[in-house]
Image 1 (cartoon, one colour):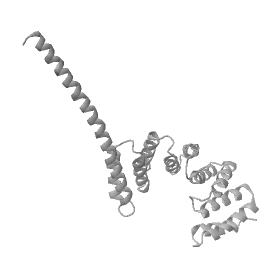
Image 2: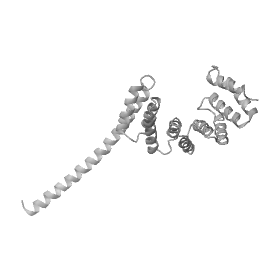
Image 3: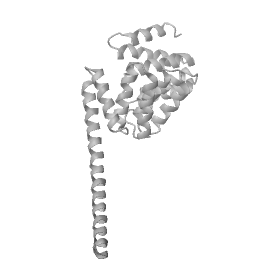
Image 4: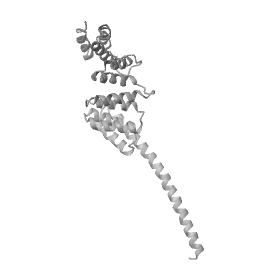
Length: 227
């Protein structure tokens, strides 16, 4: 091979390598997109399975996360299943991963707070609820306020609890059953010595809990102690 042909051959080989590199890069992008679509498909399968077959839903959510670890909805759903199973440390891991993928994911912040509260990590739970409420676009802030109010009451901050629960009670439309928010607020009013307020709001619980269930029973019991 002459020198000229050798140079030409090397240049042609270089151009071929460049083309192959570009094709590989483009193929990689297409593969990533395909993985994300498959991940979302498994997530949707899990959501459809969840009401009737929790185990199948769990498998689908796991597959979704394996294909796309940044799929925040799949992380949230997987955390939900772990929470239902009582595996709180695993649930916490998934909710934290969802929040890492999207720091404004208030739904995951609120659920994480509940998981922490169920582990008696109340101060961390309060912080998580407040982070959820820091997002002005959070569509169901009364849910975080309800749980924040309960956590603050547990920690002895009755003033803060009252304020959070009053905000939760005023939500329209509510995402927490009104009988629950009214009962918790009535309990806080009672502990603070606001007997008139406690009486008024506890009486509403019986109307709101039309089935006459546990909430109405708890409110009626507390009303007997309101002077």
